[in-house]
Structure formats: C-alpha cells, structure tokens
Length: 397
Image 1 (tube, helix red, strand yellow):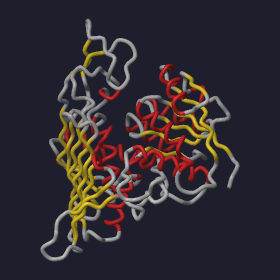
Image 2: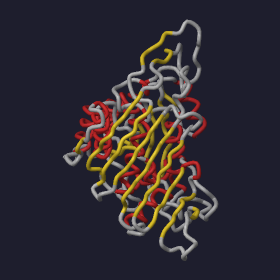
Image 3: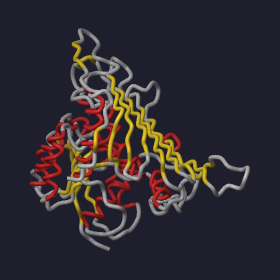
Image 4: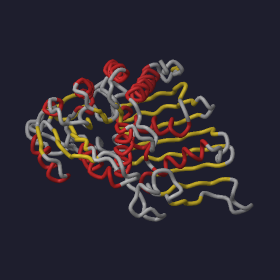
C-alpha cells in the first residue's frame, strides 16, 4: 500500500461542486486499496460563504474566494473545475501550467474555440486532464453498453434518449450564465452533452445528425440583485429583464456508424421533471431501457424468454453489473443506486490515472469533450438550416 498523499482542491461550491467535493472524500472507500491517500485541501468559490460552508461540510482544510490561490499553491496536485463554462479554459490552462491534474465538468467550454484550445493544451500537458461525463460510470448504463458490445441484443437499430429537466421552467428564475450564449449552448450543451456521450458509450460514434430543432420558450429573465445560486434569492422589486439567447428545448436525429438511428430530446423547461433522463436501446434480438428515476435497475426483453412469456422484465443492479460489486458497501440487488455514486467512481478512475494504475476505464479526455461540443454545434447548425443533415465523419481530427 502506498503512503503517498495527493492534495485536492475543488473550484466551485454550487450543487455540482459540492458533489465533486463529496466524491473526493469518498474516493478511497471503493475498489482497490493501494492508491495514494487524498488530502482534502481547498474549496474555492467567488462567494466565500459558499466555499466556507462546503469546506466545513465535506472536511476540507480551508476555503478561498479566488481560484488563483489554488493555482499558486504548490501543494495542490488535483483540481476539480466546477464553475461556469466560460471560465473553464482560463482556469484549466492555469492549472496545467502549474503542473496540476485537472478534472473539468462538462461541457468542456463555452465555445468551440475555447474547447479546441483546451484539447490542444491536453496534448502536451504532462498531467492527467479529463472532462466529467459521469453517466459512463452508472452501473445500469454500463451494463446496457456491455449487452450491446457482447451482441446480446443483436444488431442495434434504434437508440432513443431524452433528458428533461425543469430548472428553467419558472420564468422568474433569474438570469445566469446558463441562459447566455449561442443556440446549442443551452439545454443541449448542458444536459444534452450527457445524453450524447451516453449514446456513444452504448452505440458507438455518431456519423451524422439531422432534423435539428430548437426553441427558446422563455424569451427573457429577470436580472438578480445580489448573489444567486440554484435559481433562488431574487428580489422582485424594480426588475431589469435580460434576453435569453440559447435553447430551452432541443431535438435531433443522429445516425451511428453501426447503422443505428438515434432520436434525442432535451429540455430545461419540462414541467415538474427535475432530472429525468431515460434511454431505450433496441436491436434485432432484444431491447433494454433505463430510467434515472429508477437508477438501480434496467428493463430488458430478449430471446431468452419462453414462448408466450416474453415482455420487459426488471433486473436489479447487482454484483455482476460493471462498477457495482466493489463500488458499494452493500453490493447486492435491491440496495439501489443514485447519481451521486457516479461521481465517486469517476474520481476513483481519475485517481488511478494519476497514479498510473490500471483498473476502471479511463475518464473522458478533453479531446472527448471537444468532440461532444462539435456534435452539439452540428445539431445547432442543422437547426439553423431547417433540419439539414450535417456530416460528423471529420470529427476525429
């Protein structure tokens, strides 16, 4: 067992930032022992009270209000970047220059130009760099990907995926960075990035998109007075309104290299659906589905059923599924899963990469994040051209 210790900092103390903070706290409790120990060093947030609260809750040594203090601290080895997309490039490049390993939340950046620059910086970084596509780490999703890879469902002909959220459904939700940017950087860039990565994890690469359609349902939002987090704390007196410039809803059709077709739908204004991701995968010998509301199970229907007894059956996540056997302290069917474990598994895989140890599949790279953003850009171009097809075969460069 190694006695080496690596120091971690998390930049951003919002919902996703505190989930990263928790993941680093839990990282040594799953899978193999022998990885470096983790020192929970710094939580950074421009609003210091949030950083202080998160540091106290998750056991980090100190809180700061400037991410540059993390870059300047020679004791920090690993940094999670969990802030607005427009800040990703500047912070990531500074951390790479300072010799720190970087785990950056998705989407990789706010623009294709910045994402390209981050992917180029990765090539000669000399440190581990990754983007946070956590659904790869969901045991149920990984099991469906395994079923497809092993041919259990036959030749895949259709993927159907939807990710519907309601964080923007209230027109009084104040203006924030999520509602600024070009079409394709809204719901599609936010939750659609997860859906696209999940689809390619299961079915392989997309080679074209078409039928892109987007709408901005809420045309303007109030500008908040003072600090706002999670869409709250808005003073409603004498409001100033600001136009929303990106998409609330997006849909498109994708074609995979294996010949399958995919239908995709994303929303941030889906009434009373706080975090609803659902996928269906259909092939010539069976079908499988997963619903995040029932995260610890899949539904499967295949040729194994006796005549007259076909139909979708529930299969609980169990130790034969990827990730689960040694990723839970109670690893048996019926215990269930949440989205939170995905972050812990991601942190463990990242730590294995830093330590140069084989184990879990490696984390998505900055290059992967750049590819995903090029796909969302292609969908936006399809929508702007009334649904015209956009070829993706050049995205390997």
